[in-house]
Length: 273
Ligand SMILES: Nc1ncnc2c1ncn2[C@@H]1O[C@H](COP(=O)(O)OP(=O)(O)O)[C@@H](O)[C@H]1O
Ligand SMILES: [Mg+2]
Image (tube, rainbow, N blue to C red; front, side, top):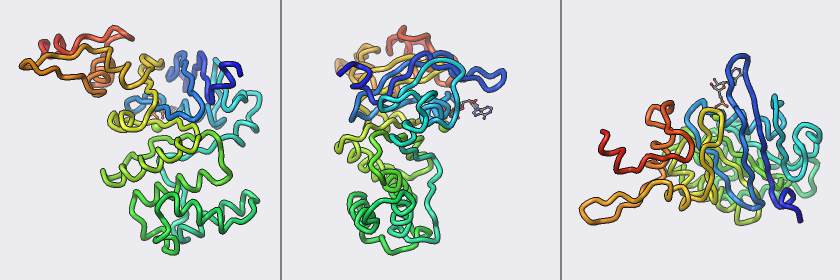
């Protein structure tokens, strides 16, 4: 297997502008099959733009991107068959029950045994008890879980979750995290975007920070934390949190970040305040 085949997603030199606004200025990253990759960035950093290009909804101005071995520009239909996309706003039908929503999507995809597919997914996402209830009675976390369940119909190998927990309360967020962990355990590759550092910290095998149009760091949580030396406070060694790493690189206002890989030590930063 070549490296590219081992990767579920690879992105190289991706550029995208909206008129004068250069959103992506050369984005590079790769996601290994069966892993959870978090694309972390402030509001407006370009996360959704990356996801839209990867899911063939938007064309890049320059660069290449491949999903499940297919090129997004020249093999868009194959890419679409390989993915599912769940956006920030749940695409479930309020008037139908949870089970009816799932059965409907399975039918639309011409799958055999839509009832069984629905029941299996309801069980996987702990929605069996609520299966017959109208979605309008569901909590935010239940809706989002149902939305993720719906996007899994047909077993896509790659799933994009664009800010899956934005607007959810802490309990609902934890429920969605459990659902995402389940996905990766079953071998689905997950690319999730988030503004929540804690979410990336909890879920991701690798974390990349998108800032001013580029990936300024990309690594495991442990690798990212090593960018900042541990600060010694009263003889107790304090490891930097992902939040420390993020704020040092990006800056507290999301604009005046330190340039890539030249993180200021946490201690110096503290002294500056
Ligand atoms: N269709 C569009 N036309 C013009 N500007 C856009 C469009 N879509 C997004 N933008 C701008 O591009 C930037 C990146 O947007 P987006 O990818 O949605 O960021 P994120 O998902 O990280 O919040 C923002 O400044 C946004 O206002
Ligand atoms: Mg977005």
